[in-house]
Image 1: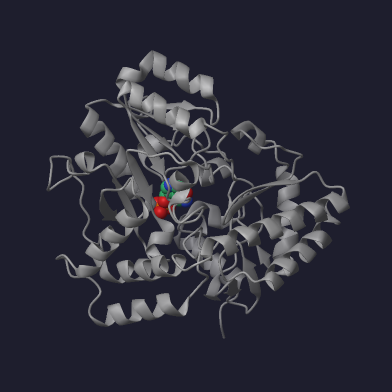
Image 2: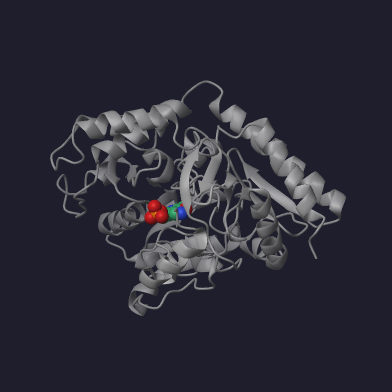
Length: 427
Ligand code: PMP
């Protein structure tokens, strides 16, 4: 007999903190218990009890081509047959580095790592090492992984659980992280005016996907580019989420801004644990062993992970891939907005190609404060109502939703119809 979701969670609670290996999965802010995945294919996830869900998380981003895409699976199986890890260079690492540099022109040299967290940690070490300065700037509600320097007014699970600042981060280190409100031009200018000479780098999610989905105001990213250039600070785009999701060339292509360094994860691993950071050659060549700034990894550039990532990167380069995603997102979000209006529920969406945000408030959404105004109780009811209907959103009002190329028009219609029913039941 297979385990039920409930019995697995009971076992998990005994041996894993909160029953999970990453906080938001635990359903803490929406209540109830998580389900356990048995398998996934295309736009769908099945739990261990055989229930099917249309999945709008896609493993938190990587599955842009759909779950278990046959070309990705076969690349992984073929590569695995030759060995899982070598500890010496392999050709797929070189293919991956060349592919990333070709698709993201601001990346002249890249280094592969194993997660988004590793990528961002390494990027700020490089920023500090290269500039000889200590302070970094981040934005409220942005999440850049769980590195000490980033758990200051952080988004994602930290925000969902009401823990944007974590115990265990020494205050002398946290003091070196300066925070700004996203989309506030004047606050950024004032901070650089006062402390610009001490700032090693500014790191930003160019579209904030860890406080739901907040788009940059027109000219805001250009403004940050200019401030960093004027004050000798490095501009770091954290494209772990937006990279290869909002356009083939990421948010930097969409908004026409060239950062000094960028971080990636999720899609470039196709579902395997992969991250990368890259940027200006003169900076990246300061990383060991080319230069003195140390960063290393036993499994970095793992051949099986590279194979999954490269297969995914091949799929997303096909003609029309992003056009189809963009159209599907508009179709879905327009349908959800219309259904909410019909039910008299204040509701709005934000969108950028294959990522979008749902808000239980009237909008427009231009800031972190706006995003926090979304009615969390309504979201909770909506989340559970949709789950019952077989549609899975992130179990948090502060996470972006993701669409894949495998979501069909029928899946989107099913979702809109389910939402129309659920909107009608909300208090
Ligand atoms: N940066 C951003 C923008 C992210 O969204 C995330 C994860 N959601 C990270 C960094 C951390 O990546 P990982 O979870 O792979 O460590």
